[in-house]
Amino acid sequence: MEFEALANVSKNLNVLYVEDDEDTLVQTSKMLQNYFKSIDTASNGEDGYDKFYSHKYDIIFTDISMPHLDGLDMIAKIKEQNQDIPIAIFSAHDDSECFLKSIELGIDGYLLKPYNVKQLNTLIEKLVSKNHTSKPILKLENDLIWDSTEKTILNSITKECYKLTSKEILLIEYLASHQNSVVKLEDIQEHIYDDFIESTKRIRNLISRLKAKLEFDIIESIYGYGYRLKTCGDIEN
Image 1 (spheres, rainbow, N blue to C red):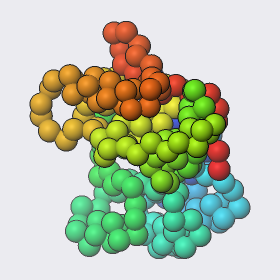
Image 2: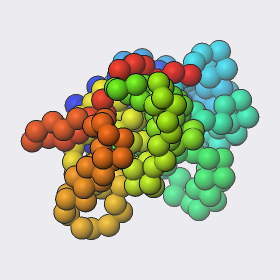
Image 3: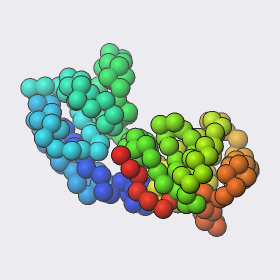
């Protein structure tokens, strides 16, 4: 996703960034401010956990090697309280033991220092996507409801439930994670079809079949750019 579209989605999220090196903390915080308006920082794992416990955050970034409580132990404590919060690691550690332990803890991203802007952009897109899709109900136009838990679309008036194919589910999940934003056709193609075929005809056919199934077009085409999900209400908890 292009930077402007991603920043439009991420700007209202609350972020915690935990890092003990002051220079790295300042430098990376400036990068994160391009995506997020609210960024709290902590200088060690103990301070980070205390802030998590007393505040509500949408995403957490952390280093590994820190005094008092290291990043992995902090993540383990946080996951005991909240399994769903997106967490990513920024680390200079390139050893398999740390990496495997972080996977066991269920982290959502691992960037090795130094990283570039493109890598950071890809990571933040993934974290923002998880944050939005964790909310189960999204109201669509024409009295339709997307239930991300059951992965179905329901007509709220007739109570008819539409079962979706795996590709249709991936399509709606991806567009729902970028609610109120236009997503480039190429980005949708890359997300749904994990191959190197560059034809975008498959996405257009997928959207056409979904329209026929629902007897309504829930996906708006923005000429020359991409697609947007037609929503008419906030995601509900």
